[in-house]
Length: 327
Image (cartoon, rainbow, N blue to C red; front, top):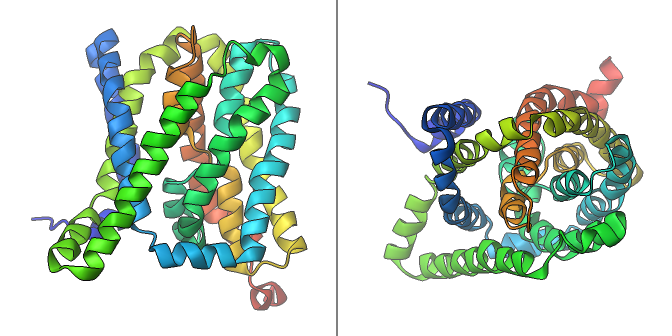
């Protein structure tokens, strides 16, 4: 009999995530259009996932991350200066379709704050730096996404970008989970019951991530089929982004003198996007129909494959000096 433990879950989490994606696609195929009803469960599952993710970040560690000025500066430069410039260039290869451009901008301009930690660890990067910086990345992207989309789309953005979905996402997906995580840590520091609750919550990141992936793909897969022609045009854009951004991160990391672990973490952050968290924004776009959520979720499929490449490629890109000298 297989005994399930936290280390077992963490060791096999990538396989678990791919099985969750397959299960979601299978559920969509079996249930058909009725699977779209699962969309209502995505936000609660995401909020729970972000709560347990933030719970892994000691508030003291968050303060330490903010004092790691060189890494944090590189992280912000790559994600909020370099990424927008690269994405602006890539969308020029798409048809002049405002909703299509909006969907690609929405997903590619938002750095990941959940499973990027997993893949950074698997790629021998400093996952603690990324984990501690997740609230900073999430707050920054929610503030800057409307600004960049407005700049890049101009007048076409007026009918697509509305303040209320961003404020709703910020409140329910950032503020509430972050406050609850801080309160749980405070409770755990002072009461045995709090420590027990914190211990139970430590089991949940992998199952909740799998649940979110299952719900997302079950709810959105029919939309991908309905918008297949436009969705197919985004795949080369996502693939190009996945190749370019770790190389940009490598250059920035070298320029700023990051150590190997921090450089690898920077590269994983540069190439990994926040598709699951921005998906509620995609659903909330007036008249977005099938296209916008389908384009966002397609990026997740491309990214999961690219992460498997990253786990082998990024450690080779960022090698310790002693290892380089022996080659």
